[in-house]
Every structure is written in structure tokens, then in C-alpha cells.
Image (cartoon, rainbow, N blue to C red; front, side, top):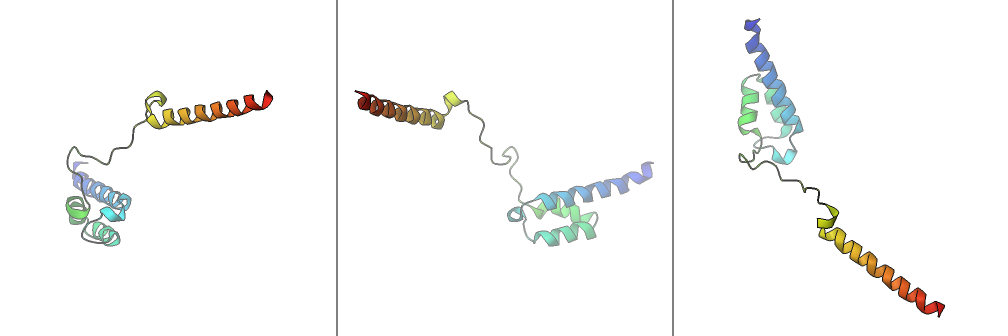
Length: 104
């Protein structure tokens, strides 16, 4: 069983690099077109995946991560929501003032 371990590790590394390459957006791929990277990964089973992981795509600095997504903000802390409430309130006031003048 232990003699199959290196073979399984090479296959796992190749599959990981292949999927990583396919999921990487074209603008993040460095040096070569994405199609060429896929061919290199599949043809050169040990060297291809290692080169892809080392130099194939733009990596963000450690700890930097991807661009942060905007977090959910509670409605009472969201200035846009509060502004829309104020505008809606003003519209309703204007409607009520116009409606009261016609009844008199």
C-alpha cells in the first residue's frame, strides 16, 4: 500500500493544479495563456503542477486575501436605508398636505 503513495500524491497534485487553473479568471493567469497552462499541467505530471502553483497565477500577499465583500448592515445603521425612509416620509407628508387642502 505504501508503494502507491507517491503515485497517488502526484495524481492529487495534478488534479488540484488542473482544477485551480480552470477556476482561475483569465486576468489572473500570468506568463502564458490559460490553455497552455492546462496543457503543461496535464503533460508534465510533476513539474507542470508545481510550476503552475509557483508562477502560474497572481497570488495575493499573505493575510491580504481577496477583496472583502461588503458585510450586511442592520437597517438602523445603514445610511442609505435611513435616507430612503426620510424621503418616503417627506413624500407622504406632501401627499397629506395636498389632500387636506382639497377637502376644506
